[in-house]
Image (cartoon, rainbow, N blue to C red; front, side, top):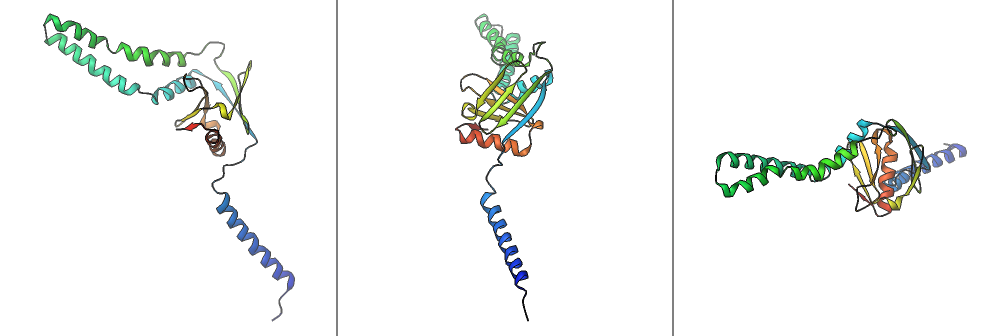
Length: 199
């Protein structure tokens, strides 16, 4: 039976492409997508500020502090009502006043992050995500942050918090709903490549 040379070459070419495709999937399946630049826009609203504050506090020890405050308050009130010894009164007053400490530690930072200045309310924020870093443009000043300048990434169900300082809570807020899956993977990979932490 005669075999058509063109058809035979076509079959071999198809087999070669299939093998190359399989090899490509195996070789590059873990390599993050290459993104030249993506631009996202969102408004800075009070709701977004509240979500940012809740996301930040959820990663701190405020729950433990709140639990200890409730316990101290209950012990202080019960002791004050039941134990009438004068020498114990000071201790119970201290326990009753203990909840003020978590408020000063966590409450004030929360309120400061929730507070939005009237001139900043509903301001249009433009974020450009590129190979070299991230640019945040608030309309008046554009801040450029290289990937090496992002020390830590905190992820929640709806926000990315990109910390640029290891000592102070200074971070960039990105709503996840505005990011594609490829862009999220790109951001995480770039931060890890430059020594940052992702959690």
